[in-house]
Image (tube, rainbow, N blue to C red; front, side):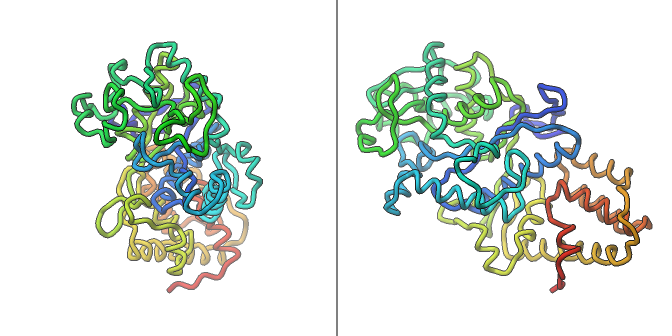
Amino acid sequence: MKLYNTLDKKVVDIKPLKEGRFSIYSCGPTVYFRMHIGNIRAYVNWDILHRALIYTGYKINRIMNLTDVGHMSKDEDFGEDKVEKQALEEGKDPLNISNQYIKTVLEDFATMNILSPKGNKVDPNMDLLKLEDEGWTRATSYIDQMISMIKKMQENGYTYETTQALYFDVTKLDDYNIFTNQSLEEKQEGVREEVGVDSEKKHPADFVLWMKKIGKYKDHIMHWNSPWGEGFPGWHIECSAMSTSVLGEKFDIHTGGMDHISVHHPNERAQNIGAFGHPSVQYWIHNDFLTGVEDTKISKSSGKGADLSDALDLGFDPMDVRYLFVSVNYRVQLKYTKESLEGARNARLSLISKLKSLYRESEDKGKILKDYKQNFIDELNNNLNISGALAVISDLLKSKEKPEDILNTVYDFDRVLGLNLKEEVEKKSIDIP
């Protein structure tokens, strides 16, 4: 399979470290609010990747984090902890807040037919104590691993301590800005954090590994003991510790959004090198943004938040939303408007109508048409070219193959698309608007 690797800045052949098996870490949500629709688009993208790799014969070891501590507002070291801030606003314990919104993650995954990181259908009512069984890792369950990894960085000379925090010294890494090719001088000019917050900080791009429970954070609710005093982990160390603890010091694929390219993922990569002496990730794969009418990224922090319920309240089916997300390549910005949803709904219902006609004409269970399946796989292997894969379906529907064979082949393709086509065709009555 070919995918766009951000470090190479081009589409490359991806080859697993272990033959026949890919290990994948997916940046998951911070559980302080219901996921916005841009998050869901990303998780549909990576669900397609997951399904496509399974479909083409690979075994998958995949995890996704649930960030329940340490992710600061505006992604700055000295912002407000998003989970704790929401807990104070709602008058609840941070654990209750994170559990509350983890449940909404499960609900949205189930509604959108997004498989769990382990590749199973999601039970929205699952026991939260069994999240790890399905491949979800909670940051607060990996504090010991974070501390252990930070110790390794400290022993290897990549850190320094101030009164307020323990930092990673980015000047110790020659290729820290390999993602952006931006010099540290340029980085210094563009860093968003207020440098004056910690006068002992050496370089504006240095980032927190462990924040001490003093000063601004003396009343921080979530805190743990560490060699650097009572405190809590920085956001970036969480992903490094969880990914390498479960997948190993080297693993295949790390997925995330374009917004992670400038800060979060350079910091993750730096931590991995600081702890292990080598990079951990073979391929960094990033999805582009969902945009609205104004061509701005949809996110809660921008004030342009939208979640799945907005589309459902307008009468759209969850599979209309999924069809829209499936139909556009993960590296392409996508307009999320009522008009684009209507277009996706019409295309989906048209497909179902054609399949229902074939279902009525079918005389047997049918077989999978190998030539069309190979064409479908070729499109998947071409950087997840789903528009090409949908074109294969269009060609198949126009063919003179037996109705039952066409139907069975499309059902087989839906193992990747995840549109519930068999259920829609055989169990529901669809009225074309």
